[in-house]
Structures are given as structure tokens and as C-alpha cells.
Amino acid sequence: MTWWRSLRRQTAAWQRERLAWRADMRRFRAERRAARCAGADPSTAEHPGPPPTGFTLLPWLLLGMGSLSNVLKGETPNPWVGGLGLLAFNSLYVYVTFRAFDRARRESVSTRVALVLLGLVTTGLALGYGGNWLMFFPLLGLATGATVRGPWLGRVGLLLTFYAGAATWLRNGWDDASGIAYATFLSSMVTAAILGLSEAVRELRAAREELARRAVAEERLRFSRDLHDLLGHTLSVVVVKSEAARRLAARDLDAALAQISDIESVGRQALTEIREAVTGYREGSLATELTRARSALSAASVEPVVRQTGAPLTPQTEALLGWVVREAVTNVVRHSRADRCEITVEGTAERVRLTVTDNGTGIGTGTGTPAAGTGVGAGIGGTGLQGLTERLAAAGGSLTAGPAPRGGFTVTADLPVSGELAVLGELAVSGVEVATAAPATAPGARRPPS
Image 1 (cartoon, helix red, strand yellow):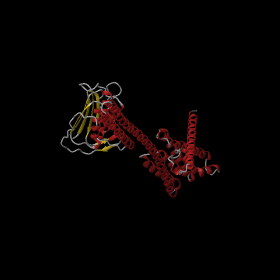
Image 2: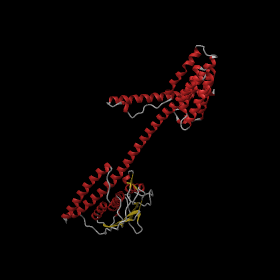
Image 3: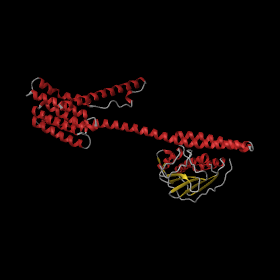
Image 4: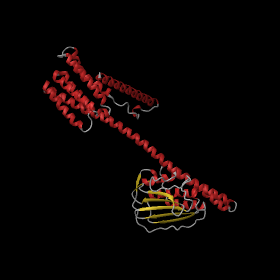
């Protein structure tokens, strides 16, 4: 009864495949109708149609109708043997072809054994009866092409072609042998090519959809980082300058109006940067960020000290360091309660280091606890610092942040000055070699509120 249970399981599997194929076909037709109703060309729809199954290879069994006719008319010697052979061939053919459309089942031992048995049955029927029964060799080639894929296809196809031609030559002579051999070779190769191409197209379509999903996820991450850094810094500057304007309004109206003018300028610049961030083409300038840092720190009653030495930097490197200055100064203004902040940029021919140090409470994020970390992924706290860590890591650099040895908080960014840099969380952009130049020093001095 084991064979009976196996037959029932296989019949149930064929029934499930048939139902799945019909469901895919109904969904495909519904999408085409919807596209037609919407005025679109149904032939340009993205849906590739239902996946091929063994049902696409069943009509080729009509090649055996001549043999069935001979059995029914009694023109075949030992019709019971011919009928059983025909039943065995059809059963093995259906079994092999239905398993050929699933890679795991196609490469299983049971499928290969069934294919070998199919070949033996085909050989026995062809040599025993000849005539119409020789048409089973092209069907064997079709099942072989559907099952055998990859580097072994050519060898197996040629071997099967010569085998079919030799068997036909032994039974019916050379005239039939050439036609059967050609039909066997053509059926095996064309079937393998069509099914392999269909499978490759579906895999490429799936890969394209996966790449599209990843691109959307990367763009969302980039925009969230830019929005956090832009609005966090800008709103912090607006709050600080608003507080300064409120304090100055009672005793120095001109200074208060200057602070309000700065708020207007910061707001306009923020609008411009947000528009550019949406399009993804914003490129920051380190000098601009240092100037803004001086203004924001001075408005918050924090003494800014800026030192910059080394060769000129590439625009990509300046953009990344500008993000670090923006985020670090924002944290100093919002959380450190410091009265002095030092920003140091030290460049060499190969690498550049940016250090932002304050003498505050040693709190670098809005979490209320020190954000200590060393290197990428070392647990640097805060959304902004974590985003900067990922950006610098993509550019071949590193970010460290934590309490300073003498008190306060220190943020250090280390970057290569040439090579491929991933700017603003996007794809890597080729950098430019930096030529050696005389050091340019920006003396640190307290700048009055502008």
C-alpha cells in the first residue's frame, strides 16, 4: 500500500499546483482588466503572468496519440504490454515535468531516478514497436530539457540525441534516425532555454523589486538624518537667539533687533537647506558651519575658540565635517551648560581630525547621561551622533564621543582626505587628492553677537 499512498500524495500535490496556477491566472487577468479599464496598455503591465507549471508541458503528450490509436485499433502486438508501457510513460512524464518547475524538487534524487526510468521505458517501447512509438524520444528530450539545467545540459542533450538516433537507426533505419535525433535535440535545448530564460526574468524582476525597496529605505534614512540635523541645529539656534533677544530687549534694543535679524536669516537659510535636502543635492561647507557655530555659541554665552590647520579639504570631506560641527555645537548649546567650546581642525596629507570640546557637565546628548563611545558602533548615544557615526563609517572614517579627561564633553571625527566618500548617507563619491598647502590658522577669539 506504500505505492498507493505515494500516488495519493502526488495527486494531492498536482491538485494544489493546479489550484495555485488557476488563482495566479485569475489574478493576472483581473490586473489586465483593471489596466484596460484605466486606459493603460495591458501589455505594459508589470505583472509577468502566472509562473509556468507542469501544465504548460502536458499538451505535448499529444505526440503519443498515434501510439494510443495503434493500441486501441489492435494494430500493436501484445496490446496489453503496449498499453501498460504507454501508461507508465505518461505517468513518469507527468511526474518529472511537474517537478521540473521547482528547483529543489527538480534536483532531487527521486526526479533524476524517474527521468532515468522514463528513458528506459522510452527505449523499450521504441525498440519493441517502432513507428509512432519513436515519437516518445522527443518527449523524453523535452522532459530532460525541463529537468536538467546548468553546465550538464549540453552534454546530456548531445548524449540523448545520439542515443535516440542510434536506437531509431537500429529499429527503422537512417531516414527516421536523423529526424528523431534532430527533434530530440531541438526539444531538449529549446525547452531548457525557454524555461531557463523565464526563470531568469522572474529572478531579475524580484531582484529589481528588492533593490527598489532598499533604495527607498536608504532614501528615508538619508532624509531622516538630514531633517534631524537641519531642524535640530536650526531650532536650537532660533531658541538661543530668541532668549538673547528677550534679555537684551529691556536694555539694548539695537542688539535685540540684531538678534531678531539673525533669527530671520537663520530661518530663511533653514528653508533653503530643507528644500535642498529634499532633492538630495545639499553640500555643506566647513567654513560656513564654523561661522554659524561661532554665532550660535556666542548667542548662548559660550566662548567659541576655533583653530584650523592643514591643507585645504575636498568638498566631500568638508561636508561631512560640517555635519559633525553642526551636531556637536547643537549639543553644546542645548545640553552642556558650558561657557567655553573649542573647535579644532587638524589636517595632514592623508587624514583630517575634527575635535569639539566643551568644559560643561560632560553630557553630550539629550538623554541626560553621558554619551560615551569609541569607534563605530560603540554605543554613541543620541540620534544625531549615531547618524554621524554611520555616515563617517561609510566614508572610511570614525567618530568618538564621550566625557573629556579634564571634564566636559569631547566629540572627535577622523576622516581620510582623499578616496571614496559616502556623502550624506548616499552612495560613495570619488574624492580628489589634496595637495600640500601652507597651514591656514583661524585664531580663536570671542565673537560678539551679530
